[in-house]
Length: 311
Image (tube, rainbow, N blue to C red; front, top):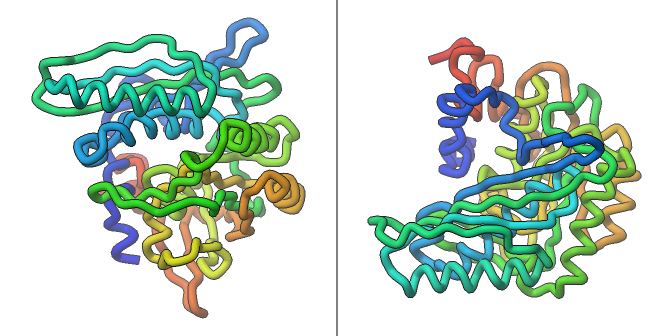
């Protein structure tokens, strides 16, 4: 548990509550919702970690599309367009970023909306946004309810890679656009069919960290049985819990079997990994032992020290 608690993907989230409440943001969802007349416009924004940009600018460009698409899809929206800011004092690096972005846009069939360059920085970076439309409903991450089941859905048909400290399980690049969009449309379908009460995509903090974010936003806790989590071949459980899967989502639901049957029909491996509980603690079960991963009365994955009553 100590390795997991100290995982950089989790620790780097703790700055959120220091910054974004200034702008009125407190739920820290995957994407934001703007309702204009009858349209539900969903917008995500993400930056790619510096180590990945430096190590592989092409892959960083590609993943600037992937991570934002997943954020929008997890909310029940169909992604439509992409915008970015790319920074580097190397034209070669900028071109590699852009070619990776182009591959992602073609793969996900997104329209390029706008780009901006900083060609004179002392660093390399990519920040991007994706905009989408939720045609029927928006599925937040702060509406999980006690007694909901936790359903984990990941496409395990992929390959593992390491870029700096970032562990990636890539299920996207080997797929055709048709295969990829079919899976993403299935995730949107969970929201549209009302099969879940809350959801998040599995992001940088990994599986357990993502569940903790969903719980903190919803002011609930969870029990998680590590023995119920499917792990790809040749990957240890410890590594898997700190890996970013390119097609991975978690749902809080009172319709677990409907979720499972629906998503398995579209190529996901679906696991029932635990329950949402009223007590705001994250319990981990493993090998007949139980440990508290995070007590949300005392600690915050988002860095909310004031409301959690700790320093």
